[in-house]
Image (cartoon, rainbow, N blue to C red; front, side, top):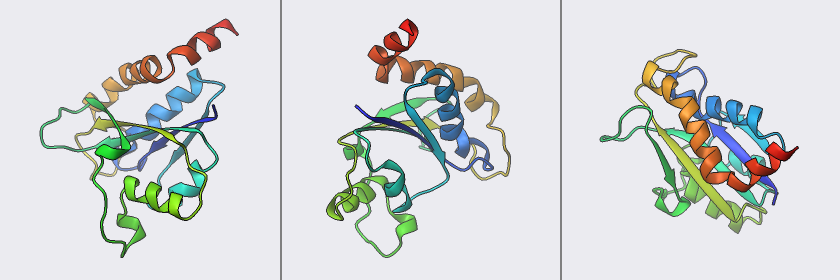
Length: 158
């Protein structure tokens, strides 16, 4: 199964880059899986994810009740969909995937989403806030344990 781990975010907006930072750490531990990072959204993501069987997206989230560094495993169906298509920049991931399928893209059938609760995504900084930064190693371990259990055993045998 051809798998892509894709860390999304903006690396110069503090916690918004947490998905990219986690993807970088996963790349160091999952040598036989494709890992990408990108500061992209909307239709641009389709070119990056086509041709894969499995997609694991890692991105930031800012909710009202979460604590910085908390992470959630979501399904594509749980994301809000955009009902208007006036701007590709404002298009949500679920809508983008559905539109890509309708356009004939060969997109992953298995999609997992990890969202990390953030504290700040408005300040220009290449570093995450302390609580988010401290959570990264544990989140990397949890993603490997939940999504790459069998794969990790194979990697250790090599």
